[in-house]
Image 1 (cartoon, rainbow, N blue to C red):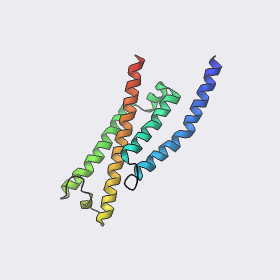
Image 2: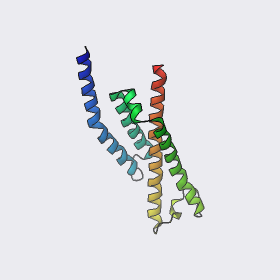
Image 3: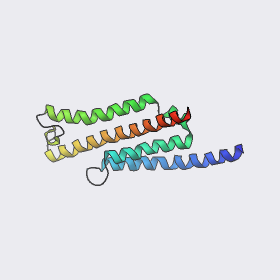
Image 4: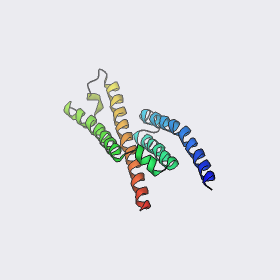
Length: 145
């Protein structure tokens, strides 16, 4: 019985180990191309968070929590929100409206808008991924008790 369970774990772990990098690469692609087509920070963040959840499901809660400590998700939550809010406040300080990207200190207003949107998408993606991971871990821990 123990050998059978071990084989199942090997297959599950190998499949996860091989697919997680591609899932994360696709998530970064979705985040980076959000202003040009379908996708963006929220969708890419969900995909990125799902890749970490897949790791936890494949390797177990204990290994997942050892890799993704609570302080790390807390920091990522804060960084994402600060990036989003920081870009908006920077626009205010430069004389524009909140999230009016064309006032950013870049030579071309169109480039400033693109860079501002990419920064916002990255901030949203980081925040959504960290919140998904936190919600999954906290819900799974509650069910263990």
